[in-house]
Image (cartoon, rainbow, N blue to C red):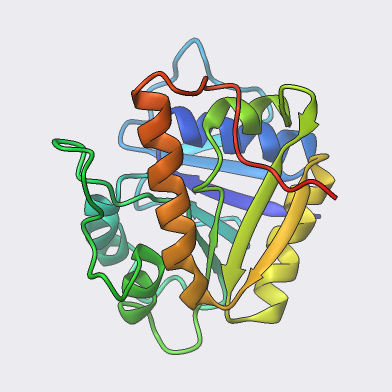
Length: 206
């Protein structure tokens, strides 16, 4: 059975929890506070950031600037896990640029901080939360693009996506994360300008 740990408690955390629910996965959500809320799910095991990770897949559903803090808390405890990077490193004060080097990506920068051989997969960053929750972009099945360097890790992420009733498309090695982040940047900028709705998104037609 698929097992997933989601670090973070924002909108994307909730959206990916819905994806995992549709996929029939075992779900753990780790947040700053262990206090329950009215929006808590019955099928989810809640805990605090720093608790042991029960999932084989680990989603970093926190802002990119918080990655270093999370990695410090889990130093030595991520071996064997598949880390899913969903971030879009946008300068939200200007909406004018990405805050990672021009020849890199958050996924590449994340991989540099992990023990050699730890699998990082870039996924979900091109999708707005509403399209993951619904599983569609209006009348079209939601397409999730993903990239990574480890075949088994990408297969595990694709299985989660497809088990949730969505389309999974492998765009290549982790170096393609830079292009995915550019797409995510454009998606968010268009939504912020009111050019698109939160229920819409990019898809592939064939």
